[in-house]
Length: 348
Image (cartoon, rainbow, N blue to C red):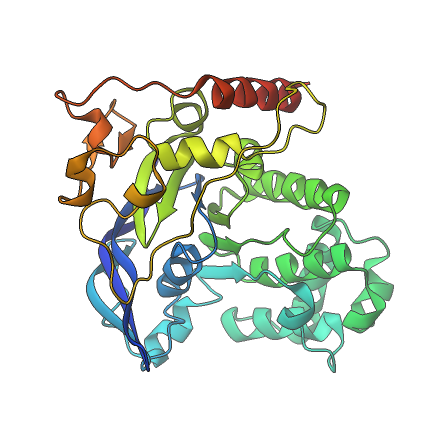
């Protein structure tokens, strides 16, 4: 079995605001192994990006507060580390691909210099060796004419090419862990597919572990080994890609799967939506946070927070519907048909 690279235990992140304390991440736990991709999925505001930034220790303190938990990277807890120690890990062992490539790159600096800077900071190499590595990286991420591109500025690149440069910078020091925070959101569908293919290819070649943050379950089917579904700062379902797509157990996961577009029109029904909106995390609701939006909610959902029930060795879900005394509720037929239609499209 692969070696465990990252382990997050009961992570709680709060933010002090004028409106009160926002409990942005509320007891998140997961693990990641070498060469594996974990996708963290959920709506905006579910705590995905805060979790990923916390792993990089990019939460500003204040207003952010690491209220509880551990982030163990190769067995070492990152939370107590000072900025000087963390800066040796950041970019070297753990790298991040940000959502918007234009803001991730320095517009006043040539692309080649932005890549070589990272190499020179983290590796004991000469400027000539750093340049040679930067050119290889540009080639690896699929940028043609790397010698010419090396000397150009970010505004001379298209959006997709800029994102490839961002990936090259993230890979510059051979990180063990790559965090990709919605790296395809700002790109059109064709370029999205190319970037996802590129990331899969890079992972095969380098055995890098990836935490992939996204709100799009369609992306997950193509890149992930395991999936953590987040809602209101908590993981509500956790399992392999097959667990989540073929045997989803949480009503929120059903909602996300039911709202996936079917581009090939395998399903004739209208796209479903999840009614309502996520709760205010300055005052998290009692019981199950998803209850007000859940058509299958029971009285207990409004009173007691559900535990994480084990569905199988790899599959867990935080819903009272899995309690032995709960009424049996299966995936709604309309959602099941949409999932089947989507999977048929993904396989074709």
